[in-house]
Length: 156
Image (cartoon, rainbow, N blue to C red; front, top):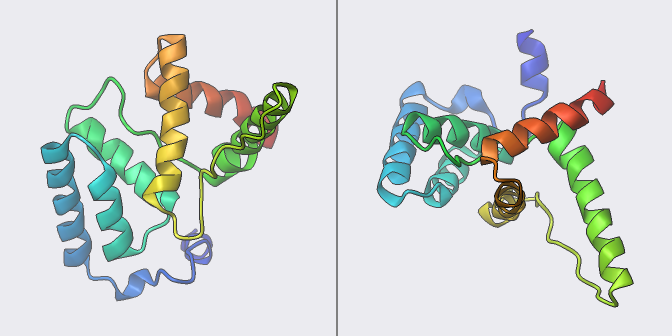
């Protein structure tokens, strides 16, 4: 099982070189940033800069960290490759393109992932999730769970 996990690591991340204490320190700093800012933006940037984690790893960590700090109503939700980025994003982008064309517009939403796993890309994803949650009267977690549950069946 460990070999599979090691193969999936991005080439820029060599976790064998990271010390346990460094990871713990960065996670604690991230927790303090979230608690102080009531936002995950600075924690995202810290995790990316200091640990070189991908958007998937950062978003999952921040999701659970925010929930543990009491952000239950609308915590940031995780992003993943298989469902969110490979299925939901293309479907969403294509739908917006088609609707824009029919209205004589050329709007195309910004990508939910970029080569630097930036906060801006993740924030575009969270903006969509928040808009859908508001429209449905749901929490962000309910939207993410519903999307994942619906689209995950198409992946297997």
